[in-house]
Length: 237
Image 1 (tube, rainbow, N blue to C red):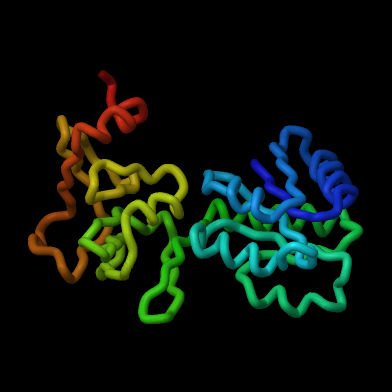
Image 2: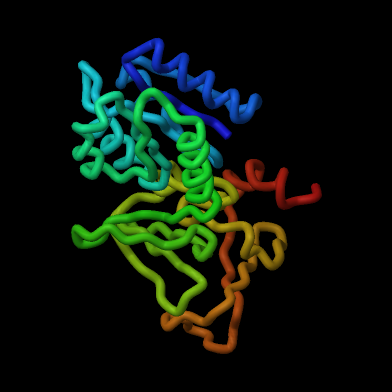
């Protein structure tokens, strides 16, 4: 588990770090006092949780969170503040928990549990026609690039299309998703077999747009550029 913490108060950073390590000694913790440095360091990983102070002199924690969420909509954020009576603004940014300073250990543990649950049962969040939609990550079979649009194919009976680019999708998602070509990112849990560059994916339900209603398989092709990065986990060369 990795925690990135943003607070302009060095003592508060030290206190939160101590509390986190008292819960579990092997947590990976990185602390920041500058919002710009913090934003540059945020990268989507399998188990990353952000702690952000709401009130800072250089930039509001709400603004920092919203900027990060534009790039990484699925990353869990825990807000905290030493001014609990003035925290209505937390609802201006998506977050999963709010903590008051000084930190209460039981509430801190609860916040981590909630954030961990979001990571375990994470959602892919995207925008379409000014609406925010979400799909459970474990229901997504693959993403396909269609020019300036993305087609998302799930285990359900329907697919969806929205404006984005595959490079942006790649930044949002976490393992085990793997890119296999310029056009596709797949969820390896649906792999049935691999033959050379041919990947057969299984699906649990037929979709309305299936051309072959008798098939419960999807055939996609990997390109040489991505095979080397893929083969360590899925090939026995």
